[in-house]
Image 1 (cartoon, rainbow, N blue to C red):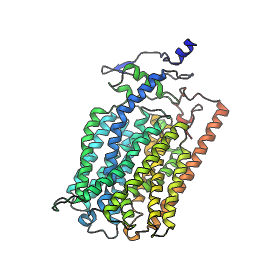
Image 2 (tube, rainbow, N blue to C red):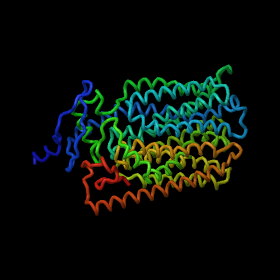
Image 3 (cartoon, helix red, strand yellow):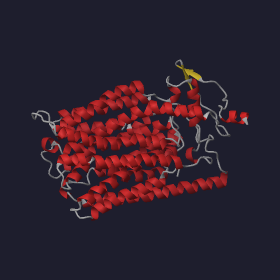
Length: 502
């Protein structure tokens, strides 16, 4: 029995030694195995904790300020920005264009941003992106007309396109499919924290007494833009590139990371690209269905960031009260998100929680369409349902997509397709709440309600397909050990021994 236990908790011997690149030990490309990968699970647990400490605090902080810079336009709207730069904007159309400017750049550049990210060191790529959107955010302070601030918003989107879409790919370099949802969920929870935190900052800025030289919305952009600039330099210095090419991992840890990444797939050589897998991604219907789900979620996400303070103010609250009342819905959404992603990783299912949460969010929009405007408490409660439906599902959808592609090259193409299709919803969300239709916004609520229910149906269909396809492959090819390496070098997720996460 002792020898049995020892063999279970020991490393499997590999052929060949680690090669050395520029004086550093680098994990070699490993040949496929036919038996389960056995490793020291205590050492693996310590490694995961080390990776968490190395990545999560910095990445969460970056995304917190990235989302603040992306979404603070909604808070600035109640602080006089339309009156100062847009001539009052009584129709709300100019503000809608400003809100959409970010997404025009984000959608256009997310595909090349993710493809090129695979060719460069990740820490430098993301650090330059962070510096770029920080500079663009601060430059909003000196904008004096619509064209100036539109340009700033466009460049914020351009630089964030180098960061956010690439994160799903970056996480797959360090975490397995059984770990990624909770990490992406915790990372994305910073979006809801940013919503709550942004409301508190905006409430405080609104009460700053000034001589009129620096308007409140300028103070807001300055406070929330400068940290991103500083974080960019920290990212270049502190964030690792890849585990096999980092001095912060020992030789044994690099070997352990390489073994972990072989579970259920075949790792690719660093900064290589399989054009066959790229073409496979371009015609994979599953990616487009996931994009439809993501489309509906982003309609809600972009409209929440740009219009939630205005919607709450339309319920009869003052501008300052509306800024403060955005905090609880975001906080509840973040709490439910954390609980859900942990359960999703535990039971290895994404489709059921996505379908359930989007149905809850759709119900919130449906009640807003039907309830009388005088029912303020009911309408405010609906914003909690909407935040739960939005913030719970986005990280699960982002985690669902990459690991069901089974190839880093396919992900480098499939993720930006998924992201670009989904982010088109962000542009739509920028235009469906014009000022002329307030305070009820029936068309905007009805459209988002329909898209949420469509997302729920699509998620249920896709989850069912993955479940049935796994059963079919088990019946035809036999059941597989989920800890064993699968040769995905040729067929990616089409490999007979690959199994999807439903």
